[in-house]
Every structure is written in C-alpha cells, then in structure tokens.
Image (cartoon, rainbow, N blue to C red; front, side, top):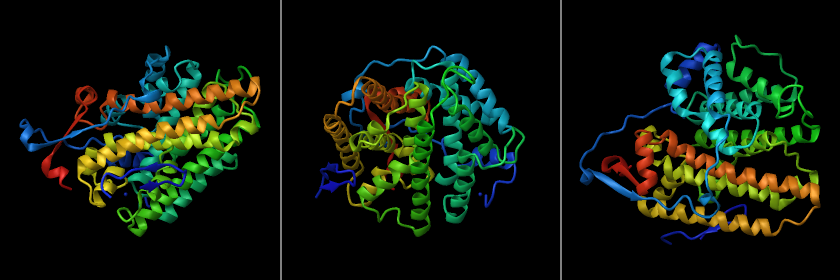
Length: 401
C-alpha cells in the first residue's frame, strides 16, 4: 500500500547558464533543451514484433468524460500570442514553427472556454512563460545548480513583489520580462487594462502564494537531482515534490483570475478546498507521466512515476496499471474532499462553484492538449491513434531501460 502525504492511498500491483546573459542565449538554450520544445527522434518500426505494446488506462473517466468546450477567441489570440513570444525571444523560424505546434493557446482555451480575449491571451502568455521558465530547472542549465536555481527564483520573486527593476522587450532577461508583463496584467480586470474592477489585494496575494508553492517544488526537484536521489525516492515523496514543481497551482489560480473568481478567505483557507487543488495537481502529473513515458525515456528524464515504479521491480505494464489505479483514486479523493466542503452562503458558494469548474477544466485541458498537439508522440496523428486505441507502442530496446 502506498500512502501519500495528502492522505491518499494506492494499491501496489506487487507487494548549459551558469547565468543567462542575453536573449540570444535564452533562445539557444530553449532550442537545444530537453523541455516541451524538444522533439526527440522516434524510431520508425513497421513490425509490431519489434515494439512493446502497452495498454493505457481510460484517461477520460469520471469528470474527465464531459463534452469539450472551446473559447471562441482561440484562433485570433493564438496568432497574436505566437507572434509576440517569438518576437520577445528573437526566435528563428525553426523555433517559431515548433512553438506554433506546441499551441499553448489551445491549452488555455480549454481551461477557460468562457473568458475574454484579454484573459485568454494572458493565460496563453503565462503558459509560454511557465514552460520557458520551467525548462531551465527541468533539464536545462539550472537542473543541477541549486544556488543558481534559488537565485533565479529570487529575481523572479522580486518582479512579483514589485521590487525588481523594469525589464523591456529588449532586455537581457526575456523570461523575466514576460513574467513582469503578466504581473501587470493580473493586477487588472480579466476584461482588460482599465476595464472593470482591478484584482483585489486578496486575490493577488493568492496568486503570489500559488507561485511560491511552484517555486518551492522546483527547488526541491533540483536538490533531488544534485543529491542523486531520483530512483531512491518513495512514490509518496515523489508525489509531494512533483505536485509543487508541476506548476499546476499557479496555473489554476491564473484561471480563477480569467473568470474573475476571487475566493473569500473562509473558502480559500478551507482545508478541503486546498485538498481539491492537490488532487487535481496529482491527477494531472500522473496522467502526464503515462503519456510522456516514451519521451522521458528518450531524453533521460527520470522524474516519472512509471520509471520510479519500474525501478522498484514492476514491469512497464504493471507500472502503468498502478498509475492508472492512482488516477482513479484521485477521483475518489476529489468527491470525498468535496463532501467535506460546507455551505458558505450565496456569494461565497458561487465563487466556490466557479473554482470547481476551473479545477476540472484544468485537468481536461491538460489531457486533451497532450493528444491534440502530439507533444509526447511521433505526430498529432500518432497522438490521435494513441487516444483511440489506448495503445502506446515503444521499441523493445527502449522499453527495457
């Protein structure tokens, strides 16, 4: 039995910065890194006998089975967002085309299908920032540099707190510039600059708190890398670290802003409300670990639950089955946590219902985005095949790792 810090349980199946100096270096590191923009070479095997066929669990069960809704502003926002981020980092044509395929706006548009164009653009730009920022710690130049990681987070925190210098589009630190524009926008109404009611001090503190949880997770991830504890961790220790470093907490609060949701303190501080955020983060990271398994093998990424369970003695299929059980347990945990949430009154409960919708949309959007963009597969078409057949085909020599 695996017990998690949040109280969940799962049955086991058998008992190259040292410092980023210029925007051009940033572009080069993003192009050559192992993050979301990197496309590992896939072997083209025609014979299924050369492949290990892994059967995936049904990832569209429970509240993931709802119809998909998209934001009508998607197409126009995507074009503008893609052009902007490419111009900020002075990207070449190859990176620009790859970024268009990654399609962060599609992810944002499933997360918030009813929000304004301004809010959708902000969410898309936040995704661009988050993945560029995260790649530095994931497999980039900060992945084994604890002091450097802490320093970069400190500089970013100063931006959030309003104590940093103003950066520009021609800044030597384009990732910081992007984040500063996000902080400016989040302080405004989701309808736009000087339109509607600006964000409350209470909400901005919640937004900062969510980013602090993310950064704490990143520091712990780097510390784990430095200490070489990747495969010696217990599953519950892995979950505790990854639910922070995943970045779901700030993304969720960002989506609250998209809908103008400002949770009263008695709602936001209720333990079951935070537990729901934990559960959604767990569900997303477990789904992600299944779908990204082959890519993680090819890129040598070891923060993956499937790989961790295999290191404990399970076969690949057993490990995937076990992760599937953990995902299903997330749904049971969600409804148990929901049953413990009291009635707060009309206004607070309306905000709570919006929060719950944001949480479920976030999980669904992350799953659909992985299939639609084919970011973990050979192509978009291969992603569609995996979704339809629930078969993940991995060369046997790679699956043996």
